[in-house]
Amino acid sequence: MTAKSEYALGVLYLLLTALCWGFVAPTVKRLTQEVDSYTISFFRVFLAAAVFALLLWRQGWRRIPWLLPWVIAGAVGRSGNYLLYNAGLARMPSNAATILAPVQALGTVFLARRLLSEQVRGKWSGIALSVGGLLLIWWSGQGWRALVEPRYMVGNTLLVLSGLASALQFTSQKALSVRFSAGQILLPVFLLSTGITAPFALIAGDLGRAYSPLAWVLLLILGIVLTGGSFYLLGEGYKRCDASTAVVITNTSSFLTLLWSRLLLREHVSAAMVVGAVLSVTGTVLVVNAERNAKGFATRQTKAGTGA
Image (cartoon, rainbow, N blue to C red; front, side, top):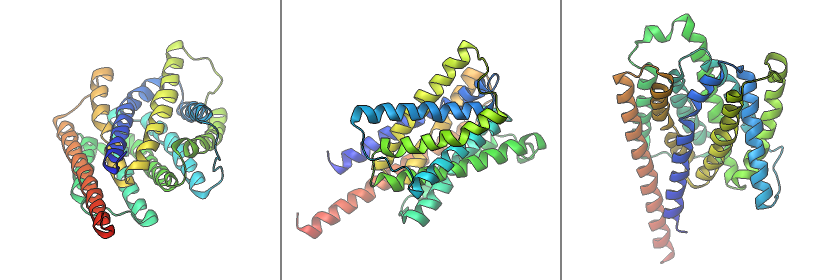
């Protein structure tokens, strides 16, 4: 497969990831009516780890990098993201969770540049449009005063911290993808995350109580499909795309979050949020094209240098 085809496949994987993530906020919001946020976090990472173990078993077990620094960083980031995200979302409308997207985008771009020496030249206009659109969605036409009211401040703070934790895990995924497959990276990250979230679910949560059949169905969908399935696609996408490009693509899930928040939860979606979604998607297209053009230029330069 050519480099151009690999890149296109990576973009497709990341768009499918975004499609899955568009259902996460409404699903978590519905679950919080019956299941506490700590238990939801535990089931997400536990069920996802089971998915990665099954995939690795089918592919043939290979060396697992259990205690590499980037693996530990990824586990801290992923478990921290879920614990903070679920706790924050329980205090907010599900469409307010879109603050997570611009924070994790800026955090991932910063970490990728500083720690991985990733180049973002040519992407800045697209990143700015994407982040600006996502901030507009978060603002949602309500005015800044409404967003800093005491009833929102705790939820917004938790979601911002959740975005930073997610950026750490995304950066670790990219750093490790040079040496390991998606399954080799994700299994230890999510098993370690299971160990981190379990005490919260046991001590502060209600792990072990009886849930309704609907709650179990939603937990299984959330853990197996929307987390396990989506992160495997994410891992394959990060192997083929820059971290700064990948995080912008997956942030298009905010558009779907708005759609499902309106259709499934009957939450308000303002004109400002729609404009923000359009800006975000436009920025994503610019970033994808910028990396594609950069890769094409690098390929031509390589061929010229080798006389091919």
